[in-house]
Amino acid sequence: MSLNTMPTVTSPTLQTQRLNLRQWRLADFEPLSDFLIRDELNKYRGGGLSRGEAWEFLSARAGDWQIRGYGCFVIEEKKSGAAAGFCGLWHPFDLDEPELAWSLYPKFHRKGYAVEAATAVKVWAHETLKLPPLMSFVHPDNAPSIALAERLGAAIEELTTFGGEPRYRYRHVLPGTQPNNGERANAAAATNSQFNESTNQSLK
Image (cartoon, rainbow, N blue to C red):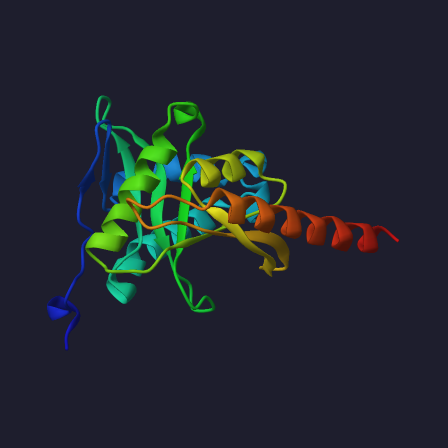
């Protein structure tokens, strides 16, 4: 098959009240790069990237759709047309299931956009892809993402590691169902105890 006849897979566009979740474009590189090069905004994913690495990141996110048939969307603010971040399904080769992942660019924080985007992705993943409840990795020190995961109704499933760093694995509920708050509290308490114990041992 020649390069000119290779099949392509493009992402659908999901719409919410305030957002379009759409496929990646060349114009998305500059806002993405401005975000990814900043260490303080990426400390829970290993620190900032170079512009070259940011280009590879964009290319990989766009390429996920071709390889997996799903991936991350660009979050676009309807009223301005500006790229506000990205949200969707991230599924590298060494995970046995996709992660519901999200990142917002700083000027779009505190607007509720991450919840709005992630909720739309959850519905799409369930209704269109027929996926079971999704999971999300969150660093134990990442308080904003912990709060967001819990606003989405997710509960801590376990404390694990990914990329050599500790991660809570949050398990989301299917759209239209309610989380069991008692089970959530018990799981969170057990996982926090496990994390505190492992941290204390590392300090000895």
